[in-house]
Image 1 (cartoon, chains in turn yellow, cyan):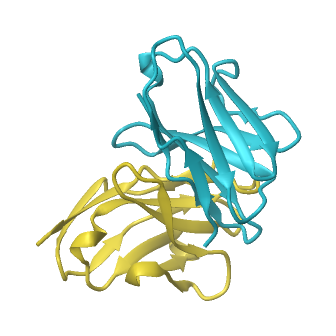
Image 2 (cartoon, helix red, strand yellow; image 1 turned 180 degrees about the vertical axis):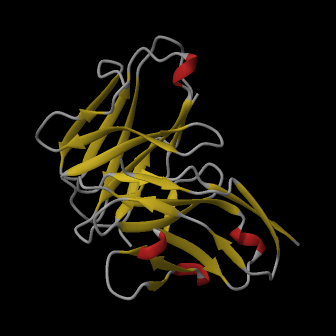
Length: 113
Length: 112
């Protein structure tokens, strides 16, 4: 079965500190992986995606993620967090059916000033 | 990136009435759209896949007669919650995949 695991339900960091949000997937073939961010009461905004090629992908707002096939991981990173980054972050992968996404449960990020 | 809109952004309805939510892809065509439901502090749950020109595909446990889906054109899908009751209160989000393979999400509709 295809699934996405985000082990951390809630992470708190200080503004300016580095950030890493974990994501693991289970899927036999090459996965199509995404990170989305959701602010309260809003839809989802795409941060970045990985389909193929360079395993380190750059996204918007200074985020990056690295695909590691050996670890079945696609962790999201940011070197210096801003207070405006506080939100819910979802990792997802696209399954065999075109377009259908499998989501992790999300990680809530709190940023202390 | 591509834009997906939803209307209305929020709606309050009386028990027993129906509510229609529209999802539009504004700058691309989508033969498939997806409808998700999200409860507070939880992830997105796929309800159904909307297919232009054919019947929607519902996930297990989702009542077809309760949540009516119509994919009227390549840019419009609608979700109608029939005979709404308090347990239907939720945040409903639609999405559409662009030709690039990326799925774009609408801003969501809060149903109370």
